[in-house]
Length: 499
Image (cartoon, rainbow, N blue to C red; front, side, top):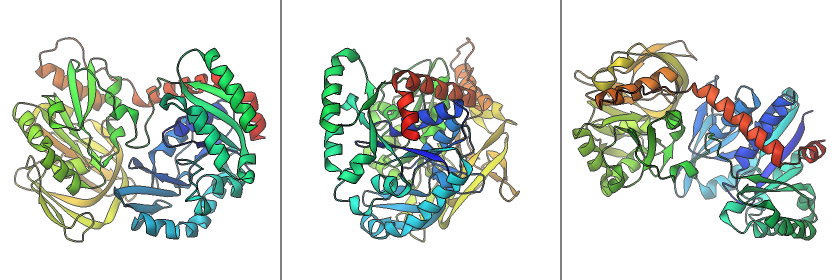
């Protein structure tokens, strides 16, 4: 049986995912086989495993930190919000359907056997399991049906580290209030408190730490700093979406759609010197970037209508007319065509006119496409023609098929790594490109090629586009995270708790 430890938080976005990843890295460095686990994740950033199953990207990031292959058992339940009141429910990588919040809460206890089955698969294969909770364990209106925080901790006998976020303020109230709202059995499971995202002189904090320990009877085993490591984010709560950045030599703008998904597709560009990557949610913020990315979305039709109503669509069309390159991925690719049809009401039902930048039409289908792919870029038109022949690898995850018309050329030639079937996908027009492949820019050669093409057009003669090896860069970030946690967490206490 694996040893286990669980990371819970006083609220969402306190840093549970990052601390889980850091512990996974430390345990791996110390010679253990480690797996992350999160029974239920709500996020729009998802991933396709080698088996063609869908899971949350946060657990993929943690598996990378642990040096192990991501498998769907690490995240048996994934909820992908479709609107403010409901989500697509994915269990063990397969879609179970769309449910309202009330309907899901009514049935989720029936998923406990699936959660435990997934957990026990990891239990048999690894030395240590690091479990991440979700939200807060003190949601007193939901505790009786909990399968992701204390309910799970009690079931598998996991000791808990409770994390609070001092950067938001009120960290002592967060931690004390959470502990106070738990019952006695649950409080006994909390073996340590962690104050996260600290900046400043820790000696000023020490009296409060001592008082907190006396009030709760639980030791504070770490005050971890606000880290500058660049890791993949779980969902649209990501702080990187809020960052304001000055426009650099090469200006890239990502449209921050209300239901944006898999915005991790563009993280690779953050590591290129002289390049700024901005997230834009209003027409006045757009300006005239060198390249505009339309990202994936959980609701293509509704987010297209949102852009139309707030003026962003018109701003994008104007920028393209002035020379900005436009590249859509997944839902963003679908938006670029002439028409989107939804005969089976997969999203909104009916039809909606697209942005008409590509001569394509998309029809939504009830069955989701989920596969890993590899292949090469064909000879695209326009500014990115120099990418012809570059290899691509990634995954597709979408509802709907897109047909090309007229002289529209496909962007890539790919092989389905599950079936071996070869096909062509995506489309390219005059400085407009679209693809269903998530991760298409992760290749160092492709990311660098995009930036070099944009730089050459602007007459920038200095060397541009020297992208780092993205996989190697992430490895350095996991090591930096582990180094920081070793310095600021009492790892002797963590190992005692683990034992």
